[in-house]
View 1 (cartoon, rainbow, N blue to C red):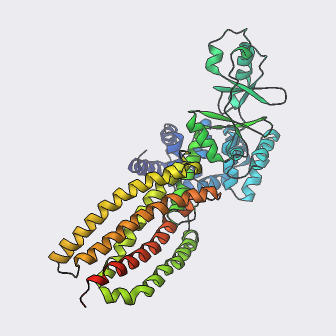
View 2 (view 1 turned 90 degrees about the horizontal axis):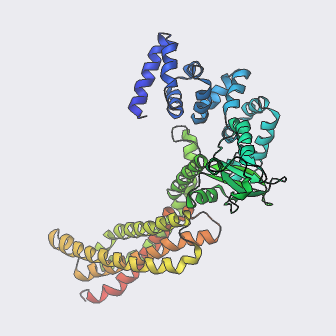
View 3 (view 1 turned 30 degrees about the vertical axis):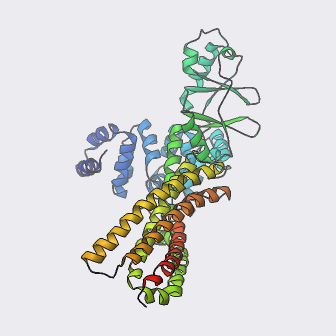
Length: 463
C-alpha cells in the first residue's frame, strides 16, 4: 500500500470511528493484507488502536500483530485481557512469538509466558538459549517429522493430524527414534507415489542443513545458494532441532544490509527505525565514531603543518589542490572497499582470493588513475591556468596529476585489502569501510602529494 493510500484510509477509519460505524471499519480492515493492516494501526492514535484491532478476524489479528512495530505490539499487549492475549498467541507461529519476546520488557514477557501452554514455554526457552545471531535464534520448532519405515498413507495421516500447528508442511523431514536427520521428502513426492509404498524407497538422503550455533547470515547464504524455501537446523550430533523458513531469511538479509550500511556510514547499528529512535539514542549511536574519526583526521593536519612552509615557498596554488586529491582518493578507496565487502558478504570472495583481487584492482586502478590524471592536468592547465589566470604552470599541473595517479592506485589497494584483512582477523569488514579507509587514504595522499611536489617543482622555479 502506498503512503498516500494509507493516509486516506486512516482518515476514513477515523471518520468512521467518530460515527461509531464499526461494521464498515471491520469490513475495510479485514479486506487488507496483514502487512497493510499493521501499517494502518501504527498510524492510528494510541487510544484507537485496541478498538480497531478487536475488529480484526481471529486469523488476521495474529498475522497483523506480528507485522506491527514493537511499540504498537507493546501497547496492545499491555491492553489485552488474558483471554485476548492467549487467543493471539495461539494463532501465532513459535518463531514470531520468540521475536516479540526478545523485543518486550520483562513484565510483558512474563504475561506472554504465563498465557502459553507448557510445551510452548519449553519450546520458547529452547530457542531463547541460543546466541542472538545464531541459526537457533531464528528457527521454529514447528516442522513435520516422519519415519522412514512409514508408508505414504501413514505420512499423509500424520500430516493431516499435526499440520494445523506447523509453519510449513510442504517439506517434511525424516528422522529416526533419536531425532537424527536422515532424509527429506516433499508433499509432491508423497502425491506422486502409491499409498502402500514406504518413503524409504524415494526419500532424499543427501540433506543440506545448518547447525543451531551457525551464524544466521550463513543460513541465509545457504538458502540463497541452493534455492531453498526452508533449511533444517540440527545440533552437533545431527539431531533435528528446528527449521528456518525463507521469510525469516528475508528479515535476516534486511537486518544485515541495514547493519552494514550503518557501519559503512560510521553509525552504530540499531534495531529501531529512524522515527522510533530518540534524539539521545541517535546521538549515542553517532558520537563514538565521529570522535574516533575526528581524532584520526588530526593526523592529516599534522602532515600539512609539517610541509606547509616548504609548499608555500613553491606555490600557493598547490594548497588549492589538496581537497581534490583527498576527496578523489577517498572515493576511489570506497569504491574498491564496497565492492569487496559485498563480495565477502555474498561468499563470492574469500581470503584465499587476495592475489586475484589485488591483480584485478591494480589493473583497474591504473586505468582509472591514468584517465583522472590526464583530465586533471588538462583542467588545471587549460581552464584554471589559462582561462581563469591562476598560477598553474605546467610543472605544477604535472606534480598534481602524478600525485593524483599515485593516490588513486594506493587508494584502490587500501580499499580492497582492508576488508579482506578484517575478515581474516574475524572482524566485520563493513566496520573498516568508508570512514577508516578515507582517513587512511587522506593521510597517504597528502604525504604522496607533498613528496612529489617537492621533487618535481623546485627545479623549474626561477632562481
